[in-house]
Image (tube, rainbow over all chains, first blue to last red; front, side, top):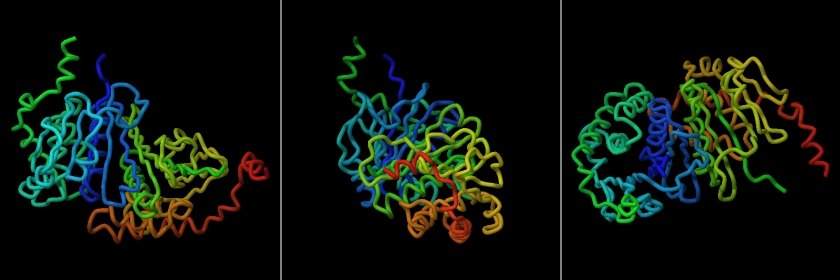
Amino acid sequence: MKEDRYEIRLSGSGGQGIITAAVILAEAAAIYEDKFVCQTQSYGPEARGGKSKAEVVISDCEIDYPKVIKLDMLLAMNQTACDSYFYNFKPNGLLLVDSTLVKQIPTSRVVSLPFTRLAREAAGKEFVANVVALGAIAHFCPVITQKNMEHALLARVPKGTKGMNRKAFKAGVKAAQEIQLDLLPRSIISAEVEEV
Amino acid sequence: MKEDRYEIRLSGSGGQGIITAAVILAEAAAIYEDKFVCQTQSYGPEARGGKSKAEVVISDCEIDYPKVIKLDMLLAMNQTACDSYFYNFKPNGLLLVDSTLVKQIPTSRVVSLPFTRLAREAAGKEFVANVVALGAIAHFCPVITQKNMEHALLARVPKGTKGMNRKAFKAGVKAAQEIQLDLLPRSIISAEVEEV
């Protein structure tokens, strides 16, 4: 059976723009790709520790359960987020981390890119690291095109910041394009499933 | 049994800042009031028509079901939103509408305030009508203090817009303070429940 839901969790610390990135991702999928989308953030006691987490579920059909069941992609913008939210992956789900801030990585099926450093270099501001990450997600996510993600981004950012955001986004896309996803190890479990 | 969940739905058209308002509301409750919060937006075909809807569920306990079950408050920033999302109220749930844009009101248990006009008059920009509405919500919502809502607001708005946002917020609080909620009709159903 084809898995219809595409599920992404974005995580990091408060102030890293995790929720903003999730809203942009959701809008790219819903408004520009014509998908059904459910975007959530749940806050518990961990929110007081500055942890931030948001989820996006994308589907061609109406979504019954709005939260992540099995992850296709986890973005971890710092070590704590990576430690806390690396679970419930689909076989061949992808972990995406900020290599500037995440040093201990729990899987070999990972793309590690220096989002924070790229944000500083490409746009002059570290706080657009979330937008650099969105660029990388746009490259790796099969259900949203790069063009539609960029549309959704530029429709939501404050006036006067479009140039900076576009630079950050492009830097993320470019860095992701240099990764050869096919060379990453694949889950044995899913290889078996594919053979059936 | 005391009803633990406090549930709010915010609705309007795309561009009215509905999702931003919901995120601020959620952060006020979670980070400043120490509550459990789940904040969602679901996008379906209606998103392409420019409709925007977001929900916030606030509780003292962990939240199992993240979407609205029975509304305590509905904000409708335009007529279409009011027509579409006025359902599933608790007895004595409150409808809050922008009187500048909503003319046909489906209940007598309503607070109708000119959010858009107040935004223009108090802050010089109609697009902060969502922040005026947040001010009114802060006044009427028993689980978030006005002070904490304002903290959450000012922590999230872009640099250089704090003054404008504060003015809009205060205008919403002030307009709400002039409403005598006790004079609104109450549901007969809930009156019976209270007598038991």
